Image (cartoon, rainbow, N blue to C red):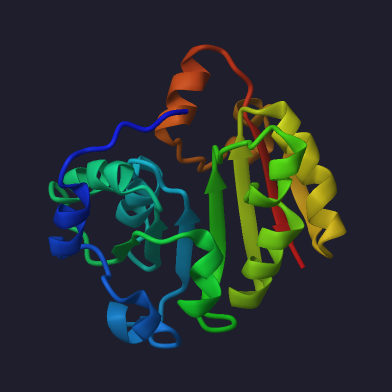
Length: 211
């Protein structure tokens, strides 16, 4: 998918009170940033932010961090954020590979991966967010009982993930090839893409992984 760059996006993000501008300085101190010791959950590739902002609204006893590397996409999320009264969410404009520089070991309780870029060519497999390379990153920042939750409409990527995640030393605790008609549907919060695909009748795949 080709992204349309929004002129001035970087400048507006740099001025936003909802974005942590120097996240490396927060490593090991996110509880101070939030002002409490509630569990921290992050979404990698948050897109326009519907999913994580809805979670933040529904769960005031948890803290949330939305990560989006593309400034023009994050900007759309910030526009939504301006309309909400929330105290338990921050945003980062970074590459997910940098997360070990931003979160201390065990500082995160859950990671959400929603409708990630499938990177279909084999030579790009390392870029997939469920690749062994990325699972190593998650392993370094998640607490002992922390989990990774992954949703996608791309069956090829999902099948790859069912193999690559165990190869990285993780276990698949739950999975379904049709989320909206499974027990995992209870409490499910939909993303923008998920809402669109569900309306088209496309099945959504989901898995929950832990160590």
